[in-house]
Image (tube, rainbow, N blue to C red; front, top):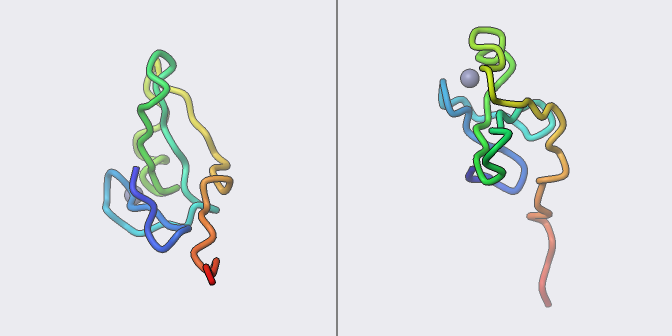
Length: 70
Ligand SMILES: [Zn+2]
């Protein structure tokens, strides 16, 4: 999952740039490294497949892109 500008990800289904505040992440129960970001619209369409779990708040993934290094 690539984070763009510190706080956005591309929906894995429609490629729309979505804020980490709004995006949902589908994960596999038996594979913790698997993470597929999906926007609300796409989530409505696909739901949560069996064996997956949904994380609705991934704002903790935000990176502080304004941080300055002096
Ligand atoms: Zn989407």
